[in-house]
Each structure stands twice: as C-alpha cells, then as structure tokens.
Image (tube, rainbow over all chains, first blue to last red):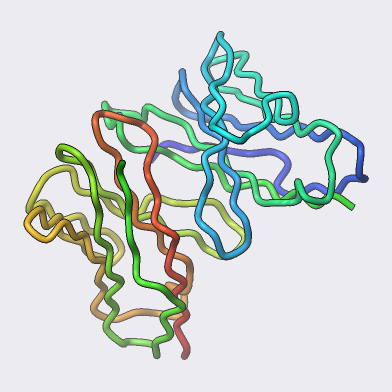
Length: 118
Length: 112
C-alpha cells in the first residue's frame, strides 16, 4: 500500500518554542492531507485538512494561529505548533488521500509524532 | 451525523483464542467501512475494508463482514497471537469523503 512518513518521530521542546512536524507521501501525490491529534487512550481528533496550494481548513475549536499548516507541494505538508505549551503535548498523526489506484476513501496514515512540551 | 460505536476494552485473551470486536455504525447512505490497527507507539495502519453490503474484508487472518441490516462490521480472528496486541479502530467514510469517522478504539491484549 501507499506509504506516508512523518518527521520527527519524537520531539521534546521547551515551553514557548515552536515545533515543526513534516508529513510526506512517499510514493504518491496527495492533494489533500489530514492532521489528527490523539490523546492517551482516546480516538483520533481531526484537527485540519491540508490542501495543496491553498489554505488549510480547520475543525471547530482548533486554533489556526496556534497550529500552522503549510502544504507547499503534492508530497509534503507541515504542521507547526507555535509557542508550544505543556497542554500541546500529544501524539500527532497525519494521513494522506486520495489513495493510489482510485481508492479514494482509503486514507494512509503516517507513523505519528510524539510531542512533549516541558 | 455519522458515528461509530465500538465495544469498550481492553479485551484480554490468551494466545490462540477466538477474537470478536463489535462495531456498529450510523450513517446516511452507504458508507465504506474500515478497521485500522495501531500498534504501541505507532500510527494507524489500514487492516481491512469493505465498500458495500455483504462484502467481507480480510487481512492477516482478520475478517469483517459489512452487515447493512444490522449496521455492523464486527472484527473477528480465529486464533490470536501475542503480536496482535494493539488498539483496533473501526471507522466509516460516507459520501465519497476521504475523512473517516472513527470509533473510540478497542485495546486488545493477548497473553502467551
């Protein structure tokens, strides 16, 4: 199946700093990518839809100035957590779609990025 | 709106036991149904899918059948292994959407 990578896999930062997380589709082009946040023992919460060449679409309650999304190419989307605080500590997962071979409803997920803000 | 309900976990089994994780859904139209698996510390992997009623998705010994009459997509495996220990998410996507609606996830723990 299609491969989506994320970098870094784990990051620890000080409160007040900004952290950038990359999401790449390795073997297909993705006009749309999605960013999720997962709290411990909870399901995934969709944060935003990243659209190549245009502004991201944020879900209700997600601060767009806090979580900056840039989808500069068909294979790369970045999520920047600005002025991070301990409550931003979480597991961030991206996914890319549509999938290969016309499987438009299948999303391919990255391995996730564990963010810890001290 | 669309929703997915999964049985609460954790589900704890001995190796080689039979597994069932229940999943029911509410959706308009005819959604596609998915099971994703998340191993500890990793992202989600698509385990199997079914796109229409009576379809059976299968992969790695896991199976799930799309039951429109009961709006269910229960996950089953005849003989679980320790390596199957993970969190399993049932999900649906409807109306041609790329964005799945996820259930809360069911943790499976398999003991030797």
